[in-house]
Amino acid sequence: MKSKPAIVLVLFLALCLNGGCQDGSRVSHSVRSGDGLQAVLDSGNDLVLEKNTVYEIDETLVYKFDGQTIKTKDAESISDYATLRIKSPDLMLLLDGNHKDNIVLENVSLDGNRYRLSTVAKENVTGGGGQPPLVFFGGNGAEGQIVRNNVFMSTRTWSTLKVHEGAADILVEGNIFLGAGTGPRGNGREKREVPFAWGDAISCAAKNTIVRNNLIIDPTDVGIVFYGAPGSIAENNVIASVSRESLGAINLVDGFLYPLDDPNHFSYRNTTVRNNYIDAFGSRIHIAIPMGAGVWVPHLKDRILVGASVHGNTVAGGAAGYGYVVNGVEDFKVYGNKSTASYSGLADGLNARKRPDEPGPFLFDPDRIENCQLQEEFQPCQKHLLHLLRCNHGDTNDLGYRIYKYGEFEVKAVINAAYLEMLGREPTETEMTENIKWMQSTQTNADTLRRKLMAGDEFVEKFGRFLPDDLHPYRIELWLDIIDNIQKDSMKQKDSLPDAETIYRQAVLRLDRSKIGRSS
Image 1: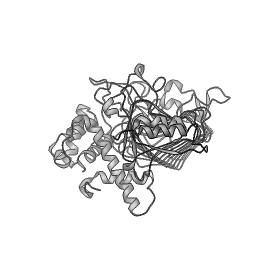
Image 2 (image 1 turned 90 degrees about the vertical axis):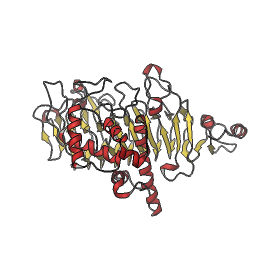
Image 3 (image 1 turned 30 degrees about the vertical axis):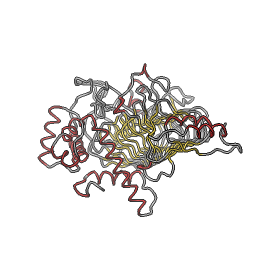
Image 4 (image 1 turned 90 degrees about the horizontal axis):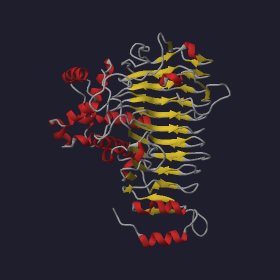
């Protein structure tokens, strides 16, 4: 790391106060050391980071003035991005944009450093009350904020990007999220963690907010959750479970913000989920798009959510749990959605004696909807659709994580994804058969399979030796390398950066290095 130009910085701060220099204009100041970052923000100026530079952060960075920008200078693809990486073991909130209008975060990597620092007990947290997110935007009165073309990885807390209630007209666009938390089986776990530290990618409660064209891989709680967020839109995003389970992909289940006049009714009016691609590629997505509080939390089943629209989405993959589920809503429009997924693995339901319906693509409770438009593929439930998660009941292993059998289709998807990531090829028929038998009999998790492959001769010959604890840092680097090459290939053709679904589909193809070569 280069040393801080202390004299220059002091002179700069003496000249530039309260949002600008002597003429009152805001300037962009390039900083090469993590020590000077907050000083630039305190001065009211934009913070411009050097390309390919890692900034170690031991105190939360805070936007101080409306209109401030944090970005990487001259960044084109994600390999150019500067990295803000948490350094302090007790720090969880990396960046705070609470209450500030028109601030921008662009072309930056935000690294929670989970696999070096582990997680933090709530009583030891610094950087926010309770347990904060990795990045905090929104807040009472905030408008016009932009979070665009960033990379978020290795978050250490319940949410990666929180867009807080009280805000409006926020844009979250073109970002990449790699890993958020640990799944119910312990996939994604840092070795010192204890259950359960699952996490969201994007948690949005702000009104009239656009969440679009984001690539979200391996969230463990939810990919995108709307806490009411009336008027907000999630469109053209990709949520993919590759190595660890996600409880939900896009959630419309929370009835506690934006209450309406009728008791127990909460507004999702003009909240829209459209044209998103949800892929249970290598690990279960318990419920792709749950709609209604009881689907998620059964004791809140009498709370009615009102007014959302869900259309044009696709659920894919071999490890799907449930698809589109409607239970406890009013004035919802759900139409034009598709499913190409394979569904398996019955949910817990209320308890072992009151199990819900078998998993499927389109399910609804006809007694718990009112004035709704549902596409013709929806099937009425025969039992119930309460608590369609498979993570709260059953046996646990010595570490406290859940153990349970895989669904028929799910186990094949888990094995296939592990071989593609770790060995760069699909498993042979014999390898598939042997691993299905082993995983179902031992109920081991996918990380164990990946570490087994990582320790084998084939992996070592192809990619070198890595410590088992470096499994997820290795995976993050693999995905970043593939995505960066996809972006660079597009720029060579003088095209604009590809959208999230194009990047994801090409990245999945490039996991099979036996066909295209490691350099691709």
